[in-house]
Amino acid sequence: MCFIYALLIIPYIVGMYFAIPAAAFAAGVIYAVGIPACYVIGLFKVLALRPDNLPTRPTWYPERKDGQEPALLGYFYGFRSPAFAEIHHVILVARSRAIDFVRLGRKILKSGFTGRPKARIITIPLSAGAAAGLGVGIAVGAIGFVAIAAVHAVAATLVFLIMAAVGLTLRLIDTALLRIKNIRMVCPHCFERVPYPAYKCKSCAETHKDVRPGRFGIFRRRCLCGTALPTLLLFRLASSDKLDAYCPLEHCKQPLEHRPGEAQEIVLPFFGAADAGKTRLMYGIVALLRATRSLDAELADSATAASLNNVREWLAPGVMTGKTLTGLPRGQIVRVTSKNAPRLLQFYDTAGERFIAAETTEELRFLTKARTFILVIDPLSVESLWQSLPRERQAELAAIRSKPAGNDTVPSPELAYQQTHQQMEAMGVKLKKARLAVVFSRADILDNVNGESAEEWATDTLGLGNLIRSARLEFGETAFFRTASVISDSGELHPSIAELTRWLVAPNGITLPETQNWMARA
Amino acid sequence: MKNDEYYFWPRMWILGITLLALAFIVLLVFGWRP
Image (cartoon, rainbow over all chains, first blue to last red; front, side):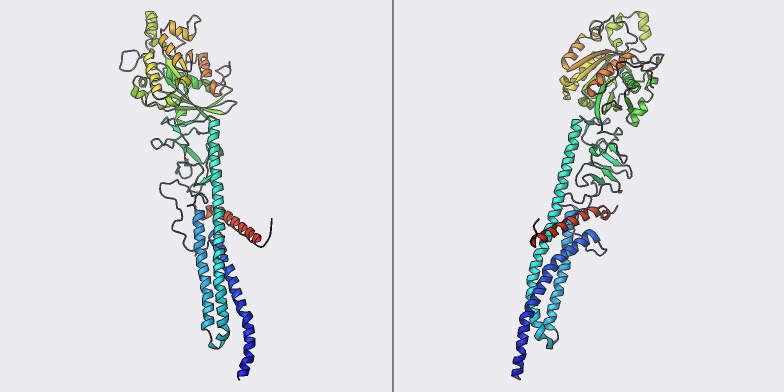
Protein backbone atom coordinates (compact mmCIF):
# COMPACT_ATOMS: atom_id res chain seq x y z
CA MET A 1 0.00 0.00 0.00
CA CYS A 2 2.80 2.31 0.93
CA PHE A 3 4.43 1.50 -2.35
CA ILE A 4 1.31 2.61 -4.25
CA TYR A 5 1.24 5.89 -2.33
CA ALA A 6 4.93 6.34 -3.05
CA LEU A 7 4.25 5.79 -6.76
CA LEU A 8 1.38 8.29 -6.78
CA ILE A 9 3.21 11.00 -4.87
CA ILE A 10 5.83 11.36 -7.55
CA PRO A 11 3.43 12.63 -10.30
CA TYR A 12 1.67 14.70 -7.60
CA ILE A 13 4.90 16.40 -6.64
CA VAL A 14 5.91 16.84 -10.26
CA GLY A 15 2.46 18.22 -11.10
CA MET A 16 2.52 20.60 -8.13
CA TYR A 17 6.02 21.64 -9.03
CA PHE A 18 4.62 23.17 -12.19
CA ALA A 19 1.03 23.93 -11.10
CA ILE A 20 1.84 26.00 -8.00
CA PRO A 21 4.10 28.48 -9.80
CA ALA A 22 1.63 28.58 -12.69
CA ALA A 23 -1.19 29.42 -10.26
CA ALA A 24 1.00 32.02 -8.59
CA PHE A 25 1.97 33.48 -11.94
CA ALA A 26 -1.62 33.52 -13.21
CA ALA A 27 -2.91 35.15 -10.02
CA GLY A 28 -0.08 37.65 -10.09
CA VAL A 29 -0.64 38.59 -13.73
CA ILE A 30 -4.41 38.80 -13.30
CA TYR A 31 -4.08 41.21 -10.38
CA ALA A 32 -1.11 43.10 -11.73
CA VAL A 33 -3.13 43.88 -14.87
CA GLY A 34 -6.61 43.80 -13.32
CA ILE A 35 -6.09 46.47 -10.68
CA PRO A 36 -4.80 49.11 -13.16
CA ALA A 37 -7.62 47.99 -15.47
CA CYS A 38 -10.01 48.94 -12.66
CA TYR A 39 -8.69 52.52 -12.97
CA VAL A 40 -9.24 52.51 -16.75
CA ILE A 41 -12.79 51.19 -16.22
CA GLY A 42 -13.30 53.93 -13.62
CA LEU A 43 -12.04 56.48 -16.16
CA PHE A 44 -14.61 55.37 -18.71
CA LYS A 45 -17.38 55.24 -16.13
CA VAL A 46 -16.76 58.71 -14.73
CA LEU A 47 -15.71 60.52 -17.88
CA ALA A 48 -17.64 58.82 -20.64
CA LEU A 49 -20.39 56.43 -19.62
CA ARG A 50 -21.65 58.19 -16.47
CA PRO A 51 -24.16 55.48 -15.52
CA ASP A 52 -27.02 56.31 -13.17
CA ASN A 53 -25.50 54.18 -10.41
CA LEU A 54 -22.20 56.05 -10.47
CA PRO A 55 -20.93 56.38 -6.88
CA THR A 56 -21.28 59.84 -5.36
CA ARG A 57 -18.56 62.30 -6.31
CA PRO A 58 -16.11 63.71 -3.75
CA THR A 59 -17.50 66.21 -1.27
CA TRP A 60 -15.14 68.93 -2.48
CA TYR A 61 -16.42 68.74 -6.06
CA PRO A 62 -16.51 72.45 -7.02
CA GLU A 63 -19.95 73.98 -7.25
CA ARG A 64 -20.89 77.50 -8.20
CA LYS A 65 -21.76 79.41 -5.03
CA ASP A 66 -24.44 82.08 -4.68
CA GLY A 67 -23.04 85.48 -5.50
CA GLN A 68 -20.44 84.08 -7.87
CA GLU A 69 -20.56 84.70 -11.59
CA PRO A 70 -23.76 83.26 -13.15
CA ALA A 71 -21.74 80.91 -15.35
CA LEU A 72 -20.77 77.25 -15.37
CA LEU A 73 -17.31 76.53 -13.99
CA GLY A 74 -14.71 75.77 -16.61
CA TYR A 75 -13.70 72.10 -16.55
CA PHE A 76 -9.96 72.46 -16.39
CA TYR A 77 -9.23 75.81 -14.76
CA GLY A 78 -7.52 75.45 -11.36
CA PHE A 79 -6.52 72.59 -9.09
CA ARG A 80 -9.97 72.77 -7.53
CA SER A 81 -11.70 72.50 -10.88
CA PRO A 82 -14.07 69.71 -11.98
CA ALA A 83 -11.18 68.03 -13.86
CA PHE A 84 -9.21 67.48 -10.64
CA ALA A 85 -12.30 66.61 -8.61
CA GLU A 86 -13.06 63.95 -11.22
CA ILE A 87 -9.57 62.46 -10.82
CA HIS A 88 -10.52 61.93 -7.20
CA HIS A 89 -13.90 60.59 -8.33
CA VAL A 90 -12.24 58.11 -10.71
CA ILE A 91 -9.92 57.00 -7.89
CA LEU A 92 -12.92 56.41 -5.60
CA VAL A 93 -14.80 54.44 -8.27
CA ALA A 94 -11.71 52.46 -9.34
CA ARG A 95 -10.60 51.74 -5.76
CA SER A 96 -14.02 50.37 -4.91
CA ARG A 97 -13.91 48.14 -8.00
CA ALA A 98 -10.33 47.02 -7.19
CA ILE A 99 -11.30 46.17 -3.61
CA ASP A 100 -14.20 44.06 -4.92
CA PHE A 101 -11.77 42.38 -7.31
CA VAL A 102 -9.32 41.57 -4.51
CA ARG A 103 -12.17 40.28 -2.32
CA LEU A 104 -13.25 37.98 -5.16
CA GLY A 105 -9.70 36.59 -5.37
CA ARG A 106 -9.55 36.15 -1.62
CA LYS A 107 -12.88 34.33 -1.67
CA ILE A 108 -11.68 31.97 -4.39
CA LEU A 109 -8.46 31.28 -2.51
CA LYS A 110 -10.37 30.73 0.72
CA SER A 111 -12.57 28.18 -1.00
CA GLY A 112 -9.38 26.34 -1.98
CA PHE A 113 -8.52 25.93 1.71
CA THR A 114 -12.04 25.17 2.89
CA GLY A 115 -13.56 23.35 -0.10
CA ARG A 116 -14.27 19.62 -0.48
CA PRO A 117 -11.91 17.73 1.88
CA LYS A 118 -10.96 15.15 -0.74
CA ALA A 119 -9.87 17.83 -3.18
CA ARG A 120 -7.91 19.84 -0.65
CA ILE A 121 -4.75 17.90 -1.33
CA ILE A 122 -4.73 19.69 -4.69
CA THR A 123 -6.58 22.96 -3.98
CA ILE A 124 -4.63 23.92 -0.85
CA PRO A 125 -1.18 23.96 -2.50
CA LEU A 126 -2.59 25.66 -5.58
CA SER A 127 -4.39 28.27 -3.43
CA ALA A 128 -1.25 28.81 -1.41
CA GLY A 129 0.73 29.41 -4.59
CA ALA A 130 -2.01 31.65 -6.00
CA ALA A 131 -2.12 33.58 -2.70
CA ALA A 132 1.56 34.34 -3.02
CA GLY A 133 1.03 35.42 -6.63
CA LEU A 134 -2.02 37.41 -5.58
CA GLY A 135 0.03 39.31 -3.03
CA VAL A 136 2.68 40.18 -5.56
CA GLY A 137 0.01 40.94 -8.20
CA ILE A 138 -1.81 43.30 -5.84
CA ALA A 139 1.44 45.12 -5.05
CA VAL A 140 2.36 45.47 -8.73
CA GLY A 141 -1.23 46.33 -9.66
CA ALA A 142 -1.39 49.00 -6.97
CA ILE A 143 1.75 50.56 -8.43
CA GLY A 144 0.13 50.44 -11.89
CA PHE A 145 -3.06 51.94 -10.43
CA VAL A 146 -1.13 54.85 -8.91
CA ALA A 147 0.89 55.26 -12.12
CA ILE A 148 -2.25 55.57 -14.26
CA ALA A 149 -3.79 57.99 -11.75
CA ALA A 150 -0.56 59.99 -11.95
CA VAL A 151 -0.72 60.03 -15.76
CA HIS A 152 -4.34 61.21 -15.51
CA ALA A 153 -3.36 63.95 -13.04
CA VAL A 154 -0.35 65.03 -15.12
CA ALA A 155 -2.55 65.20 -18.24
CA ALA A 156 -5.13 67.33 -16.39
CA THR A 157 -2.38 69.55 -14.97
CA LEU A 158 -0.81 70.06 -18.39
CA VAL A 159 -4.17 70.95 -19.93
CA PHE A 160 -4.87 73.34 -17.03
CA LEU A 161 -1.46 74.99 -17.34
CA ILE A 162 -1.87 75.35 -21.10
CA MET A 163 -5.38 76.78 -20.60
CA ALA A 164 -4.11 79.17 -17.91
CA ALA A 165 -1.24 80.28 -20.15
CA VAL A 166 -3.59 80.73 -23.11
CA GLY A 167 -6.07 82.63 -20.91
CA LEU A 168 -3.35 84.90 -19.54
CA THR A 169 -1.90 85.48 -23.02
CA LEU A 170 -5.34 86.34 -24.41
CA ARG A 171 -5.96 88.78 -21.57
CA LEU A 172 -2.57 90.39 -22.18
CA ILE A 173 -3.24 90.64 -25.93
CA ASP A 174 -6.68 92.09 -25.23
CA THR A 175 -5.25 94.67 -22.82
CA ALA A 176 -2.40 95.47 -25.20
CA LEU A 177 -4.82 95.99 -28.08
CA LEU A 178 -6.89 98.37 -25.95
CA ARG A 179 -3.69 100.29 -25.12
CA ILE A 180 -2.50 100.31 -28.74
CA LYS A 181 -5.89 101.54 -29.92
CA ASN A 182 -5.79 104.04 -27.04
CA ILE A 183 -9.16 102.85 -25.82
CA ARG A 184 -9.91 103.97 -22.27
CA MET A 185 -13.49 103.36 -21.28
CA VAL A 186 -15.29 105.99 -19.22
CA CYS A 187 -18.73 105.54 -17.71
CA PRO A 188 -20.97 108.43 -18.84
CA HIS A 189 -23.02 108.06 -15.62
CA CYS A 190 -20.43 107.90 -12.82
CA PHE A 191 -17.50 109.35 -14.84
CA GLU A 192 -15.14 106.65 -13.55
CA ARG A 193 -12.70 104.73 -15.68
CA VAL A 194 -14.24 101.35 -16.56
CA PRO A 195 -11.52 98.69 -16.34
CA TYR A 196 -13.70 96.21 -18.20
CA PRO A 197 -17.46 96.41 -18.65
CA ALA A 198 -19.80 94.03 -16.86
CA TYR A 199 -22.27 92.28 -19.15
CA LYS A 200 -25.86 91.23 -18.76
CA CYS A 201 -26.98 88.12 -20.64
CA LYS A 202 -29.85 89.11 -22.93
CA SER A 203 -31.50 85.69 -22.51
CA CYS A 204 -31.74 85.61 -18.72
CA ALA A 205 -30.71 89.13 -17.58
CA GLU A 206 -28.04 87.72 -15.25
CA THR A 207 -25.04 90.04 -14.80
CA HIS A 208 -21.54 88.74 -15.47
CA LYS A 209 -19.25 91.07 -13.55
CA ASP A 210 -16.03 89.91 -15.17
CA VAL A 211 -16.31 87.91 -18.36
CA ARG A 212 -12.58 87.72 -19.05
CA PRO A 213 -10.80 84.33 -19.34
CA GLY A 214 -10.62 82.56 -16.02
CA ARG A 215 -12.25 79.73 -14.12
CA PHE A 216 -15.53 80.20 -15.99
CA GLY A 217 -14.05 79.73 -19.44
CA ILE A 218 -11.16 80.77 -21.64
CA PHE A 219 -12.51 81.44 -25.12
CA ARG A 220 -16.14 81.61 -24.06
CA ARG A 221 -18.22 81.02 -20.99
CA ARG A 222 -21.57 79.36 -20.56
CA CYS A 223 -24.22 81.41 -18.80
CA LEU A 224 -26.42 79.47 -16.37
CA CYS A 225 -29.23 79.78 -18.92
CA GLY A 226 -27.06 77.91 -21.45
CA THR A 227 -26.07 80.83 -23.66
CA ALA A 228 -22.44 80.73 -24.80
CA LEU A 229 -20.84 84.14 -24.31
CA PRO A 230 -17.55 85.56 -25.62
CA THR A 231 -14.95 86.38 -22.97
CA LEU A 232 -12.96 89.23 -24.47
CA LEU A 233 -13.37 92.40 -26.48
CA LEU A 234 -10.87 90.66 -28.76
CA PHE A 235 -13.65 88.19 -29.61
CA ARG A 236 -16.09 90.95 -30.61
CA LEU A 237 -17.59 91.06 -27.14
CA ALA A 238 -18.62 94.70 -27.60
CA SER A 239 -20.77 93.99 -30.63
CA SER A 240 -22.14 90.65 -29.40
CA ASP A 241 -25.91 90.44 -29.72
CA LYS A 242 -26.07 88.16 -26.67
CA LEU A 243 -24.95 90.71 -24.10
CA ASP A 244 -25.61 94.25 -22.91
CA ALA A 245 -22.72 96.19 -21.33
CA TYR A 246 -23.03 97.74 -17.87
CA CYS A 247 -20.77 99.79 -15.64
CA PRO A 248 -19.04 97.25 -13.37
CA LEU A 249 -18.61 99.67 -10.47
CA GLU A 250 -20.77 98.78 -7.48
CA HIS A 251 -22.07 102.31 -6.93
CA CYS A 252 -23.11 102.73 -10.57
CA LYS A 253 -24.11 99.59 -12.51
CA GLN A 254 -25.75 101.73 -15.19
CA PRO A 255 -26.16 100.46 -18.78
CA LEU A 256 -23.42 101.30 -21.28
CA GLU A 257 -25.38 101.14 -24.49
CA HIS A 258 -22.62 102.67 -26.56
CA ARG A 259 -20.72 99.37 -26.89
CA PRO A 260 -17.60 100.41 -24.94
CA GLY A 261 -14.30 98.81 -25.85
CA GLU A 262 -14.48 98.89 -29.62
CA ALA A 263 -13.69 102.56 -30.18
CA GLN A 264 -11.48 105.23 -28.68
CA GLU A 265 -13.45 107.39 -26.25
CA ILE A 266 -12.89 111.14 -26.35
CA VAL A 267 -14.20 113.08 -23.38
CA LEU A 268 -15.13 116.64 -24.26
CA PRO A 269 -16.31 118.70 -21.26
CA PHE A 270 -17.81 122.16 -21.74
CA PHE A 271 -17.33 124.61 -18.93
CA GLY A 272 -18.06 128.25 -18.37
CA ALA A 273 -20.53 130.53 -16.62
CA ALA A 274 -24.28 129.96 -16.68
CA ASP A 275 -26.05 130.90 -19.94
CA ALA A 276 -22.73 131.16 -21.77
CA GLY A 277 -24.04 129.01 -24.62
CA LYS A 278 -22.49 125.63 -23.74
CA THR A 279 -25.56 123.55 -24.55
CA ARG A 280 -26.17 125.35 -27.80
CA LEU A 281 -22.54 124.88 -28.80
CA MET A 282 -22.81 121.15 -28.10
CA TYR A 283 -25.93 121.03 -30.28
CA GLY A 284 -24.05 122.84 -33.02
CA ILE A 285 -21.11 120.40 -32.90
CA VAL A 286 -23.43 117.39 -32.96
CA ALA A 287 -25.46 118.86 -35.83
CA LEU A 288 -22.25 119.48 -37.75
CA LEU A 289 -20.91 115.96 -37.20
CA ARG A 290 -24.21 114.47 -38.32
CA ALA A 291 -24.27 116.69 -41.38
CA THR A 292 -20.73 115.89 -42.50
CA ARG A 293 -20.87 113.64 -45.53
CA SER A 294 -17.46 112.03 -45.05
CA LEU A 295 -18.39 110.97 -41.49
CA ASP A 296 -20.92 108.54 -40.16
CA ALA A 297 -22.11 110.05 -36.88
CA GLU A 298 -24.73 108.21 -34.87
CA LEU A 299 -26.14 108.90 -31.43
CA ALA A 300 -24.65 106.00 -29.50
CA ASP A 301 -27.29 105.38 -26.84
CA SER A 302 -30.97 105.93 -26.23
CA ALA A 303 -30.46 108.77 -23.71
CA THR A 304 -28.31 110.67 -26.21
CA ALA A 305 -30.80 109.98 -28.99
CA ALA A 306 -33.63 111.28 -26.80
CA SER A 307 -31.85 114.57 -26.10
CA LEU A 308 -29.90 115.18 -29.31
CA ASN A 309 -32.00 113.71 -32.07
CA ASN A 310 -33.61 117.04 -33.00
CA VAL A 311 -30.68 119.39 -32.44
CA ARG A 312 -31.23 121.16 -35.75
CA GLU A 313 -34.62 122.34 -34.51
CA TRP A 314 -32.98 123.82 -31.41
CA LEU A 315 -30.46 125.65 -33.55
CA ALA A 316 -33.07 127.36 -35.69
CA PRO A 317 -33.03 131.19 -35.61
CA GLY A 318 -34.98 132.62 -32.70
CA VAL A 319 -35.22 129.32 -30.81
CA MET A 320 -33.94 129.62 -27.22
CA THR A 321 -32.09 126.68 -25.71
CA GLY A 322 -33.59 125.44 -22.45
CA LYS A 323 -31.70 125.99 -19.20
CA THR A 324 -29.40 123.12 -18.28
CA LEU A 325 -30.38 121.39 -15.04
CA THR A 326 -27.91 121.87 -12.21
CA GLY A 327 -27.69 118.15 -11.43
CA LEU A 328 -24.69 116.11 -12.50
CA PRO A 329 -24.65 115.82 -16.29
CA ARG A 330 -24.71 112.56 -18.16
CA GLY A 331 -22.29 112.05 -21.01
CA GLN A 332 -23.92 112.48 -24.42
CA ILE A 333 -22.26 109.98 -26.70
CA VAL A 334 -21.87 110.23 -30.45
CA ARG A 335 -20.16 107.48 -32.45
CA VAL A 336 -18.23 109.03 -35.29
CA THR A 337 -16.80 106.80 -37.99
CA SER A 338 -14.49 108.25 -40.56
CA LYS A 339 -12.12 106.38 -42.86
CA ASN A 340 -10.14 105.43 -39.79
CA ALA A 341 -11.52 103.53 -36.78
CA PRO A 342 -14.72 104.67 -35.07
CA ARG A 343 -14.53 107.12 -32.18
CA LEU A 344 -16.91 107.74 -29.32
CA LEU A 345 -17.23 111.41 -28.48
CA GLN A 346 -18.52 111.94 -24.93
CA PHE A 347 -19.90 115.45 -24.51
CA TYR A 348 -20.42 116.71 -20.96
CA ASP A 349 -22.68 119.74 -20.82
CA THR A 350 -22.77 120.97 -17.23
CA ALA A 351 -24.85 123.79 -15.83
CA GLY A 352 -22.70 126.89 -15.30
CA GLU A 353 -23.84 127.12 -11.67
CA ARG A 354 -21.69 124.08 -10.94
CA PHE A 355 -18.50 125.96 -11.82
CA ILE A 356 -18.94 128.59 -9.11
CA ALA A 357 -18.13 126.51 -6.02
CA ALA A 358 -15.33 123.99 -5.51
CA GLU A 359 -17.70 121.43 -3.94
CA THR A 360 -19.90 121.26 -7.02
CA THR A 361 -17.00 121.34 -9.47
CA GLU A 362 -15.10 118.52 -7.80
CA GLU A 363 -18.06 116.23 -8.38
CA LEU A 364 -17.42 116.54 -12.12
CA ARG A 365 -14.88 113.73 -12.18
CA PHE A 366 -15.10 113.44 -15.96
CA LEU A 367 -12.78 116.47 -15.99
CA THR A 368 -9.96 114.13 -14.96
CA LYS A 369 -10.64 111.89 -17.98
CA ALA A 370 -10.51 114.64 -20.60
CA ARG A 371 -7.56 115.87 -22.63
CA THR A 372 -9.46 118.59 -24.47
CA PHE A 373 -11.61 121.16 -22.68
CA ILE A 374 -14.01 123.72 -24.08
CA LEU A 375 -14.40 126.98 -22.17
CA VAL A 376 -17.46 128.85 -23.40
CA ILE A 377 -17.74 132.57 -22.76
CA ASP A 378 -20.72 134.78 -23.52
CA PRO A 379 -19.12 138.07 -24.64
CA LEU A 380 -22.29 139.89 -23.56
CA SER A 381 -21.57 138.86 -19.98
CA VAL A 382 -18.37 140.93 -20.09
CA GLU A 383 -19.33 144.25 -18.57
CA SER A 384 -16.95 146.39 -20.67
CA LEU A 385 -18.42 145.08 -23.94
CA TRP A 386 -21.97 145.43 -22.65
CA GLN A 387 -21.40 149.01 -21.58
CA SER A 388 -19.92 149.83 -24.98
CA LEU A 389 -23.14 148.83 -26.73
CA PRO A 390 -25.72 151.51 -27.56
CA ARG A 391 -28.81 151.59 -25.32
CA GLU A 392 -31.07 150.31 -28.12
CA ARG A 393 -28.73 147.39 -28.78
CA GLN A 394 -28.62 146.57 -25.06
CA ALA A 395 -32.40 146.53 -24.99
CA GLU A 396 -32.44 144.16 -27.96
CA LEU A 397 -29.87 141.78 -26.44
CA ALA A 398 -30.91 141.91 -22.79
CA ALA A 399 -33.16 138.87 -23.23
CA ILE A 400 -30.32 136.61 -24.38
CA ARG A 401 -27.56 137.97 -22.10
CA SER A 402 -26.31 135.53 -19.44
CA LYS A 403 -28.12 135.83 -16.16
CA PRO A 404 -28.38 133.14 -13.55
CA ALA A 405 -31.81 132.43 -12.09
CA GLY A 406 -32.60 134.32 -8.89
CA ASN A 407 -29.53 136.50 -9.14
CA ASP A 408 -29.20 139.90 -10.72
CA THR A 409 -25.43 139.64 -11.11
CA VAL A 410 -24.20 138.67 -14.56
CA PRO A 411 -22.04 135.51 -14.17
CA SER A 412 -18.37 136.25 -14.61
CA PRO A 413 -16.54 134.17 -17.25
CA GLU A 414 -13.26 134.73 -15.38
CA LEU A 415 -14.69 133.37 -12.14
CA ALA A 416 -15.93 130.22 -13.88
CA TYR A 417 -12.57 129.78 -15.63
CA GLN A 418 -10.41 130.37 -12.53
CA GLN A 419 -12.58 128.19 -10.32
CA THR A 420 -12.68 125.33 -12.83
CA HIS A 421 -9.04 125.33 -13.84
CA GLN A 422 -7.92 125.45 -10.20
CA GLN A 423 -10.26 122.58 -9.39
CA MET A 424 -8.99 120.62 -12.37
CA GLU A 425 -5.44 121.03 -11.09
CA ALA A 426 -6.57 119.96 -7.62
CA MET A 427 -8.16 116.88 -9.17
CA GLY A 428 -4.83 115.94 -10.73
CA VAL A 429 -5.47 116.96 -14.34
CA LYS A 430 -2.16 117.60 -16.08
CA LEU A 431 -3.07 120.89 -17.70
CA LYS A 432 0.27 121.08 -19.49
CA LYS A 433 -0.76 118.00 -21.45
CA ALA A 434 -4.29 119.28 -22.02
CA ARG A 435 -5.80 121.36 -24.81
CA LEU A 436 -8.20 124.21 -24.22
CA ALA A 437 -10.58 125.74 -26.71
CA VAL A 438 -11.70 129.16 -25.53
CA VAL A 439 -14.95 129.79 -27.36
CA PHE A 440 -16.71 133.14 -27.48
CA SER A 441 -20.32 132.52 -28.35
CA ARG A 442 -22.87 134.74 -30.10
CA ALA A 443 -20.57 135.60 -33.03
CA ASP A 444 -23.70 136.01 -35.16
CA ILE A 445 -24.79 139.09 -33.21
CA LEU A 446 -21.32 140.54 -32.63
CA ASP A 447 -19.84 140.03 -36.05
CA ASN A 448 -17.79 143.13 -36.54
CA VAL A 449 -14.29 142.44 -35.19
CA ASN A 450 -12.33 144.53 -37.74
CA GLY A 451 -10.09 141.65 -38.84
CA GLU A 452 -8.79 140.94 -35.34
CA SER A 453 -8.17 137.37 -34.23
CA ALA A 454 -10.46 136.01 -31.52
CA GLU A 455 -7.60 136.23 -29.05
CA GLU A 456 -6.83 139.86 -29.86
CA TRP A 457 -10.51 140.73 -29.78
CA ALA A 458 -10.92 139.07 -26.37
CA THR A 459 -7.90 140.96 -25.01
CA ASP A 460 -8.61 144.35 -26.53
CA THR A 461 -12.37 144.56 -26.70
CA LEU A 462 -13.47 142.26 -23.88
CA GLY A 463 -10.60 143.03 -21.55
CA LEU A 464 -10.03 139.35 -20.81
CA GLY A 465 -6.25 139.61 -21.10
CA ASN A 466 -5.69 137.97 -17.73
CA LEU A 467 -7.85 135.00 -18.65
CA ILE A 468 -6.17 134.65 -22.04
CA ARG A 469 -2.66 134.82 -20.53
CA SER A 470 -3.59 132.36 -17.79
CA ALA A 471 -5.04 129.91 -20.34
CA ARG A 472 -1.93 130.17 -22.51
CA LEU A 473 0.30 129.67 -19.47
CA GLU A 474 -1.58 126.84 -17.80
CA PHE A 475 -2.64 124.64 -20.73
CA GLY A 476 -0.41 122.76 -23.12
CA GLU A 477 -2.27 123.99 -26.19
CA THR A 478 -4.82 126.78 -26.39
CA ALA A 479 -6.94 128.01 -29.28
CA PHE A 480 -9.50 130.79 -29.46
CA PHE A 481 -12.71 130.78 -31.44
CA ARG A 482 -15.68 133.00 -32.04
CA THR A 483 -18.66 130.84 -32.79
CA ALA A 484 -22.34 131.11 -33.49
CA SER A 485 -24.26 127.94 -32.93
CA VAL A 486 -27.12 128.76 -35.22
CA ILE A 487 -28.63 127.54 -38.42
CA SER A 488 -29.48 130.33 -40.81
CA ASP A 489 -32.90 130.80 -42.36
CA SER A 490 -31.54 129.01 -45.42
CA GLY A 491 -30.72 126.00 -43.21
CA GLU A 492 -26.96 126.43 -43.20
CA LEU A 493 -24.90 125.89 -40.05
CA HIS A 494 -22.62 128.81 -39.12
CA PRO A 495 -19.11 128.00 -40.48
CA SER A 496 -17.47 128.83 -37.14
CA ILE A 497 -18.73 125.52 -35.73
CA ALA A 498 -16.80 123.58 -38.37
CA GLU A 499 -13.61 125.46 -37.54
CA LEU A 500 -13.97 124.70 -33.82
CA THR A 501 -14.98 121.06 -34.32
CA ARG A 502 -12.07 120.48 -36.69
CA TRP A 503 -9.65 121.68 -33.99
CA LEU A 504 -11.36 119.61 -31.28
CA VAL A 505 -11.30 116.24 -33.07
CA ALA A 506 -8.20 116.54 -35.26
CA PRO A 507 -5.79 114.86 -32.74
CA ASN A 508 -8.13 111.88 -32.52
CA GLY A 509 -7.99 110.95 -36.18
CA ILE A 510 -11.30 112.47 -37.22
CA THR A 511 -10.85 114.62 -40.28
CA LEU A 512 -13.46 117.16 -41.23
CA PRO A 513 -13.48 118.37 -44.84
CA GLU A 514 -12.29 121.92 -45.43
CA THR A 515 -15.49 122.90 -47.16
CA GLN A 516 -18.87 121.35 -47.43
CA ASN A 517 -22.40 122.46 -47.91
CA TRP A 518 -23.52 121.77 -44.34
CA MET A 519 -27.14 121.85 -45.46
CA ALA A 520 -26.65 118.70 -47.47
CA ARG A 521 -27.62 116.29 -44.74
CA ALA A 522 -30.05 116.58 -41.91
CA MET B 1 -28.17 73.62 -18.54
CA LYS B 2 -26.71 70.37 -17.23
CA ASN B 3 -23.03 70.35 -16.31
CA ASP B 4 -22.74 66.86 -17.87
CA GLU B 5 -23.65 68.28 -21.25
CA TYR B 6 -21.23 71.20 -20.90
CA TYR B 7 -18.39 68.98 -19.66
CA PHE B 8 -18.86 66.27 -22.29
CA TRP B 9 -16.08 67.42 -24.64
CA PRO B 10 -13.59 68.42 -21.92
CA ARG B 11 -14.07 64.93 -20.44
CA MET B 12 -13.51 63.34 -23.83
CA TRP B 13 -10.36 65.39 -24.20
CA ILE B 14 -8.87 64.35 -20.87
CA LEU B 15 -9.92 60.71 -21.43
CA GLY B 16 -8.31 60.70 -24.86
CA ILE B 17 -5.12 62.39 -23.68
CA THR B 18 -4.78 60.03 -20.70
CA LEU B 19 -5.34 56.90 -22.82
CA LEU B 20 -2.90 58.09 -25.46
CA ALA B 21 -0.30 58.81 -22.78
CA LEU B 22 -0.82 55.36 -21.27
CA ALA B 23 -0.54 53.66 -24.65
CA PHE B 24 2.66 55.59 -25.32
CA ILE B 25 4.13 54.59 -21.94
CA VAL B 26 3.16 50.93 -22.44
CA LEU B 27 4.80 50.93 -25.88
CA LEU B 28 7.94 52.51 -24.41
CA VAL B 29 8.00 49.87 -21.62
CA PHE B 30 7.80 47.12 -24.24
CA GLY B 31 10.79 48.44 -26.07
CA TRP B 32 9.27 50.58 -28.81
CA ARG B 33 11.32 53.64 -29.59
CA PRO B 34 9.91 56.55 -31.51
